[in-house]
Length: 92
Image 1 (tube, rainbow, N blue to C red):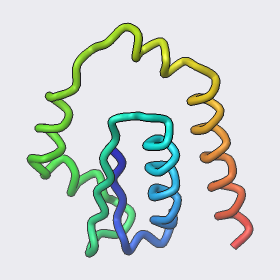
Image 2: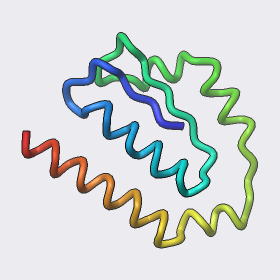
Image 3: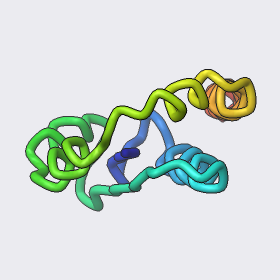
């Protein structure tokens, strides 16, 4: 699950949207929640959100899926997204 505050002035919301889309394109079971009135501290809103726990407890341990998470394609996607996001943010 990816969550972000729409009014975040520290990390642009677009970074979470891009990460969500990349994970979705890899076939991951991922959800995106954007809180319209929240700034950077979006985890507080998330931990108060029943949907977060419903989604979390619906997930099942899958050994094959765990191995896929260590697949370099997924690793590289997340790593590249993170470093590109940080680099772009620092260029502002």
